[in-house]
Image 1 (cartoon, rainbow, N blue to C red):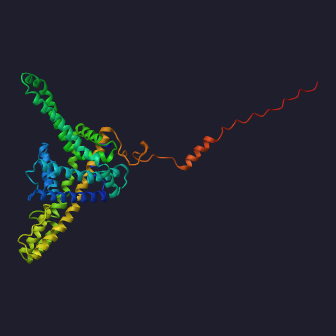
Image 2: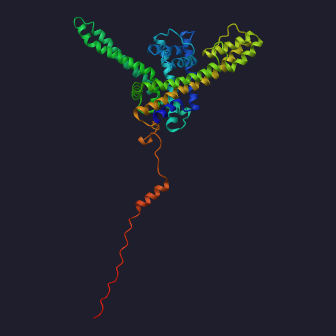
Image 3: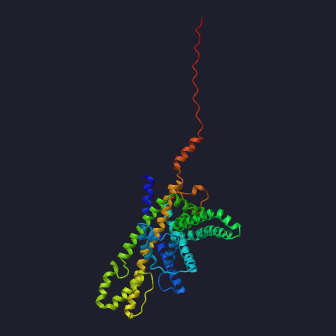
Length: 409
C-alpha cells in the first residue's frame, strides 16, 4: 500500500474534530426529530417513527437492506435505531414522499453545512462559523435539492421508455416483431435504472459533500459520486465500512452503555434507578418510563403514574434526551464529516486532485482555489527589482602606455 493510500485511509478514520460541526449535527437532529413527531401526529401513527420507517423502506426498495450488508450491517442497524428509534411500518406513497422531502431538506441544510465545515478543515485547516456554514448551505440549497430531482427524473425517463416499449408491443400484427427489437433495449434500460437507484442511495452523502466542496453544481456532484462509486467500489465500501463501524462503536458506548435503553438503565442512570427502588416501585417505574421513552425517541406516557412519579418521568426524559442529542449530534457530524473525508480520498485517488483544492466563495480567478500562493519575502522582491534596474557595468578601458621615443641619432 502506498503512502497516498495510507494517508487516505487515516484521513477517513480520523475525521477532523470541530465543535461547530457537532453543534450543527445536534441541531439538525433535533429539527428532524421534531418534524417526525409532527408527521406522526398528522397521520395518526402511534407506533414507530416515520423518518425511521422512510429510511428503512428506502433501503429495502433499493435492494440494499442494511442488515444484508456484511460486517457493517449490524453497526448501521444500531446507529439507525439509536438515531430514530423503532421504524413506522406500512407507509404509503404520499407519506414516503413527504417524509423523504423533509428528510432531504434537513440533510441538505445541516448536512451540507457540516460537510462545508469539515471540507475547509481538510483543505485549509481553517474553521468556519455556524452562521457562515448555514449561509453557504442555504445559498446552495438549489444545488442540493436538484440531486434527487435529477436522479428521479433519470429513473422516470428510462421507466417511461420501458412502459412505452410495453405499449408498442400491443400493436396488432407489428407489435410482436417490434417487441423482439425493443426487448434487449428494455433490459438495458432496466439495468440503467438499477445503477441509478443504487448509486443514488449509496452515494447521496457523497453528492452532498461534492456540492459543499466544488463549484460546478448538481450534475458535477452526481457524476463525481457515480464515477468514484463504480470505478473504486472496493475503496468506497471499505471507507464507509470504517465510518459506520466507528459510528456504531460511538453509539454502543455513548448510547447503549452509558445512557441505556429498554430494561437496561445505563451506567449514568443505573445508580439513580437503584436508589429509587428504596422509595417504591412507582418511583422506579416513573424513572423507567421517561428513560425508555428517551431511548426510543418518543414522548413519555404518564398513564397510571402519580404526580411525583410523573414529574420524575418528565425529568428523566428531558435529561436523557439532552445527553442523547449531544452524543447523536456527534454521530451525525462524524458520518457527514466522514463522507466528506471519503470524497477527498476518492477524488485524490481517481482524479489526482490534491486535498488543498476546493472552492472558496468570492474567488475571482483560479488562483483563489486551494491554499494561497507562496510569495517571496518583501526584502527579496526589492533585491530582485534593484538588480533588474542596475545597468550593466562597463568593463574598464585598458590603460594606454606611452610609446617609447626613439633615441636621437
